Length: 198
Image 1: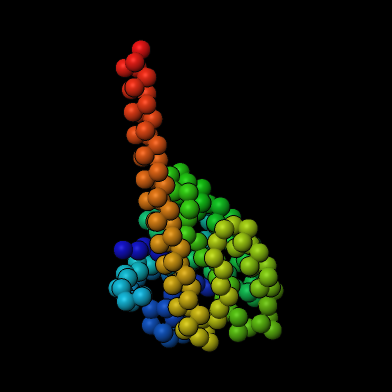
Image 2: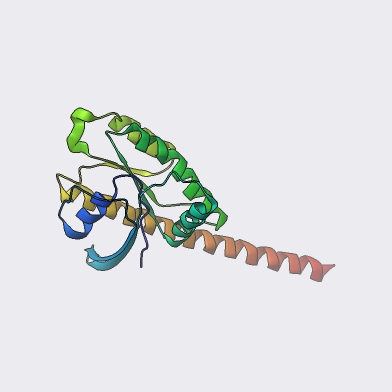
């Protein structure tokens, strides 16, 4: 079971498009939790999505809530508007906060997808595709640029991309645990032999 998604600005449109295939243009700053079943490669996958708007309130209470969301999620979708440089500027900080919280929990690889939304409004663009791509590359994140208003397919690619990154992360964690476990076992055996022979 997956528990993906932390979303930043203008994200509700992306989530609703994924869930319903419809585009709704007006949203409030509402926090919502959704469950959605999809079939990917012939297998049913349950997405639990915690969709919430970005808040600039940095109070301890707000930070605690953000930590809960980060601990809850298996993966993250961070969304900015290509027409709003301020929303893009927030992304780097949010990725750092997520990675720090997950590393504290012992997770090295954190599945994060960065999405530039509103591609249909290219005439109002203030953030280039290249900037989004370079940011994602520098932070080891996946990158997509979509228009939730124009097409369902791009939004579907975002969530499937997140799913792929979550699978890779879980596989890497299992392999890492297996190797670490073998190394610890071997170390214990050799340490015991050394003490036995003394």
